[in-house]
Amino acid sequence: MQRTMKSLACKPHAEVPADLVSAIDYFGDPQFCQQLVASLRWADSTPVCPLCGCNQSYYCSTRRVWKCKDCAKQFSVKLGTIFEDSHLTLQQWLPALWMMAKGTRGLSSRKLALLLGTTHRTIWFMQHRIRLTMRTDSFKRTAPAKRSEAA
Ligand SMILES: [Zn+2]
Image 1 (cartoon, rainbow, N blue to C red):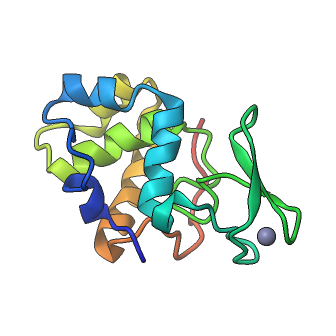
Image 2: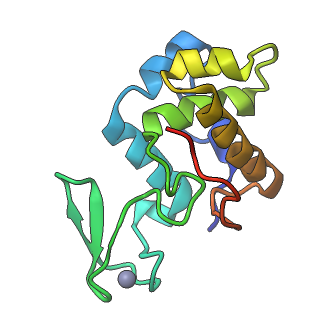
Image 3: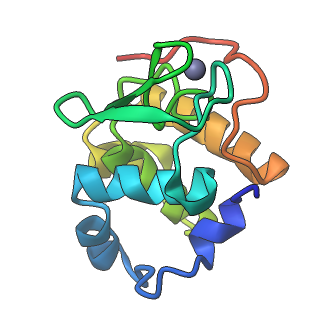
């Protein structure tokens, strides 16, 4: 079962934030953000190794990664998604995604950079990936990023 961008905008989680203040609170906990992405990504939030497809893994809570029981590789909830290869936290990604999914108009990338505590170039990078996600309606990363993310 593939979870989609539409799931974030109208997902079954009853308390989807209605405004920015609520969104900041909603996406404020890193553990919650990880669980949210896991629930959108994997059926029943059961992690599936993106490297071999195995659904048996150990969770390493200190690093917030899983270790696959089959291939023994570690993977995070970000691996294989638009969030991969990014120093940005899910606490930064998800509010940006929420704002773009809500169609917040008049919010420039400079303002978004200020709100999320990052650079203008990083916001361009995020927006590129989020737009790709909206076009494909999937969090899965379909093509390698053409440019690297600015710090
Ligand atoms: Zn594996």
